[in-house]
Length: 363
Image 1 (cartoon, rainbow, N blue to C red):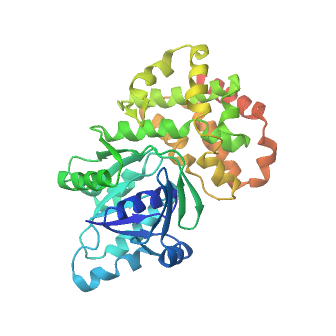
Image 2: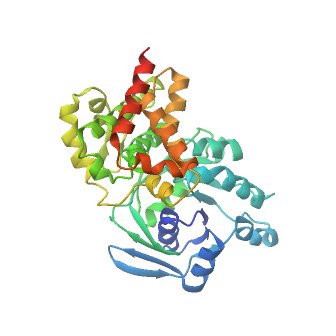
Image 3: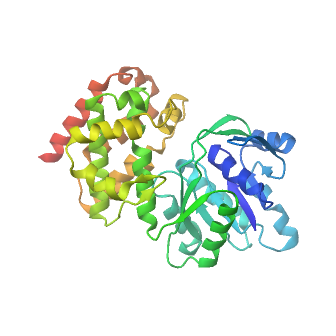
């Protein structure tokens, strides 16, 4: 089985490295600097067993380079492509992949990305029979180009056919490869339930942390900010209920039980639970939206997180004022970074904006 991993960040390197350790042919697609580094010294993976230098993995700076061999053999270059790029890079990555494939058979395309909307983009580009939905909950840190560290060795991974037209042999082959690489794979019958549950996990403290420039543990230590997070979650859960998307148990988090509890239990009961389960779970690491904003990235995955809740809410008739405020505020800061200082560590601004939005939504 030949595997192409699109994206050379932490998850791409983790999945590609572990798959290469099983003896499979694996090619990583990243920036030219990354490709040159891995070509020269291999991929460095530090996990619970120590440091590993993986030299069997190939690395290229473009998808066109990855597909050069198929022009001479006439065989499909890859059986599986795994997308790990940021959601705002999905459209460009898929167009590049489509151009590189040319007349070759299309591989199954697995999304291991955060947010909602990537599988739809895969289906639009290659047809619904190509798309596999995936989730991964392993925390990984990038130490340098081609160097990653597993922060918590828990290798839970979810898979689901995005559409009934996906051939089961493609899904079975992906599952088998990932299991042999050491991932604890769970097959979910409801792809949207799996992806939207992962969205709930990714939402927690993410946009708020970026806007206020605060770590999640500080956010979840504050009752008013916890209530803001709860309001955003409750909107998302209401949207899921209206769209008939069930929350599922994912990565050790019992969301099938927690979902109804979060929607309807008194906030005073939920605050201690969220402090324990979420506030201290990141071990001091800042979330992805914070990292992108404060590294000066001019794009944000909030469109595929809180923004996805807003879009689906409009479709099913559910009001989502808190998620709208989080999405619009963060996108404004992305476009006008000079305004970041006025929001920095000023929860009152964000709380007031959310309160105004909720009042307007009730009129």
